[in-house]
Image (tube, rainbow, N blue to C red; front, side, top):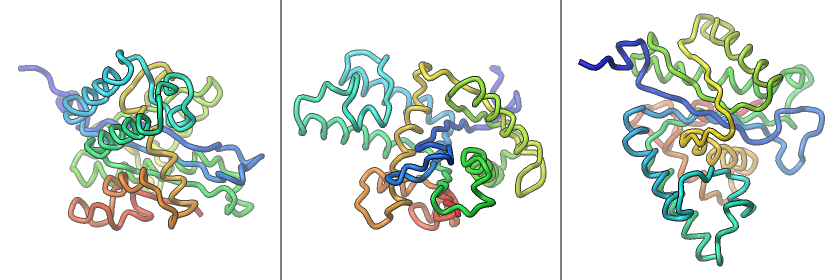
Length: 256
């Protein structure tokens, strides 16, 4: 019989991470004064059988190949490969297809938004990325424990940003997992870093969800169709019976 992931000590989940906004505190953008970290948590079976092939099909249909990497900023600004839209209707059709793909992809969201402009002096001394990372890893642990997989290793995939930043992130990740968390015990997570050119379906979806979350926290009453698609994906207080509700300060944490 083939050796399964569980037999090797791996959980049924894989996590893809991306961010939105600048984690620096020196110059805060008044139009977007937040830092968002988003964890997209997939069941590996669904990711392999459904998410990846659907994303590949979208790329073949619109671009004729699958080398295009979906970046929220480039799509929104119609840059690079995304200058292909001939008119507004063509662009809306693409966005509709992309929205449906995200809606149909079963993943669980754990996100943390740092409202940098509202931090007090002591909080300002902390790195917003590290602060958000701790909260997201704690939420991830809540999930794997709920699923009875807290003894198995879950891999957390992040995109490389630069040698110095990557070293600092890995150090902080390991520090949190070694007990510097609200549970004060080890967390069963392993970090893996991927190059920006890796063309990972999971990282691309994480990139697409981060900014709508930030916009919602900044202005929760403003119409936000992209966020509306995400509401039912957040980890929430009431479990699967309460999806779309009870996620505030659970799957969607915002500080302060």
